[in-house]
Length: 240
Image (cartoon, rainbow, N blue to C red; front, side, top):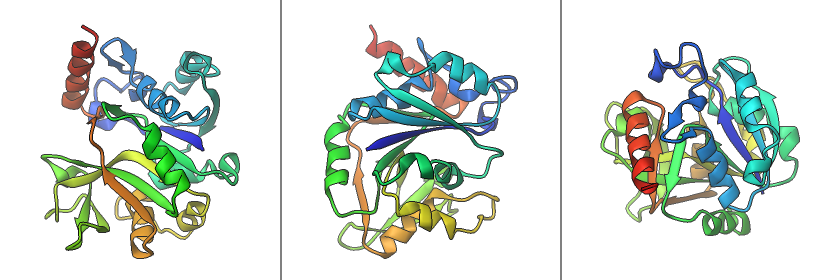
């Protein structure tokens, strides 16, 4: 299995902190934010990772991470022109992924607690074409929201709905196989002008090929000022 870390975007939710730098360089206690998704992939046993870069200060990210040796990773970099969405960023890795399954982690996502090794192995050894981890949140309107059938299976995801069907959202960890690139190639931009990852996941819910389970650890989206502070405080407590 290969890995992707998505470190593009303009970090508008963190303005003015990110007016002159990339949000993935923001400190989470004693480490840059981007260290966390790389460690998530390394903890799965993944060694080959592509970092999709965009926005400001991308040279600083390359200088910081270098070849990935510090994490036991072999890093490759690719540039995303513009903010065209998660699915578009994933599409840039088609040649890199080849015939392998792969895991995508958003650069501002921090996971703690539940080991990821068995989750990755379960997906890779299973029949699913795509997978994601779910998490219960207090403000699901900010996310893609899962809708369940009577048996508890995910039947679709709605992107930032005004009336959420549940409090469960897919966090920024996605498991995919190479067939996902053909799905992405047929997508149209959403009303936000982006190619949405929820549209990719919905393709697999419609075909019974989606792996989805609730993450039992602790998850943070450090992409806002408040969540960045909370993530830093949690990291500080762990390091005491």
